[in-house]
Length: 294
Image 1 (tube, rainbow, N blue to C red):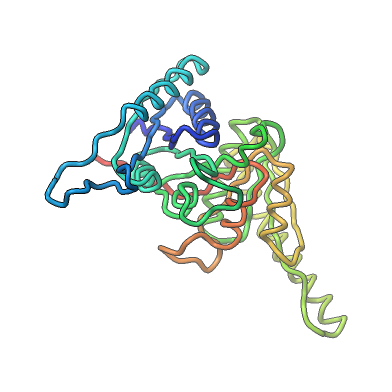
Image 2 (spheres, one colour):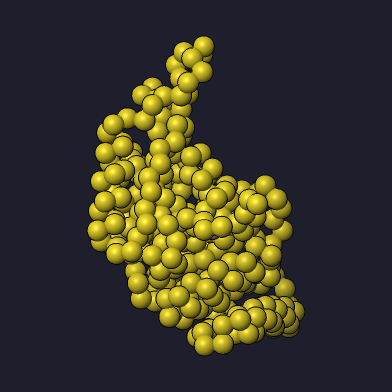
């Protein structure tokens, strides 16, 4: 099944930056690109006003022209690109979440039309990060050029979700001929304890972090023998802030959709959510793709 790379497009600068990165990714992976625009009724609903009218609102000519213009521009700037456009009646988040069931990758901007700094909950990027059915790449921040140098950074915590994130991060680092940085953040010891007890706890924590990183690095090196892999143990009171800060030197940060202790249906954990909102580079949320239809 030749799953496409999907980009949500609403005409905003953020979505256009996402579409451009999606086009480059589609060409690099020899995949088609699908541009999706979820449109609403003029009063804000994706359903007809008349409850007895079983039809759905027609897409507007303006949005159709916008999509066709974006597609033509991308095809001109990315030789070999195969691009299609689709309008879906419904909210933009729901439209792209549904398309993610059949996609290899979804790329969205961090803010759309009417967005503002810090907005996350309920946004298209937020909905995709939480509910996507395949890996979701969030392009942010749109005020800065998308970085191309720097390593691929991924968090390691021993969870199944992080294990899949490491797989994706290694694949991305290999495609980019970039270094892969495996980062594990542990909290410092707290409380009034005897110095010897604190030292023993610190030593045990360091050993656990080293073990997790070494195990992850061994798996990556076995699957990608030529890849440059760095193990980076970090100690910080806030894992979220530590990884957000580390993202400032990266070209991409990859994060699992749930961390240790997560369960099916749980929304993004605090670390994942912090990176999606505040990372200094694009963020890839590692949702496992759904099985292809027969």
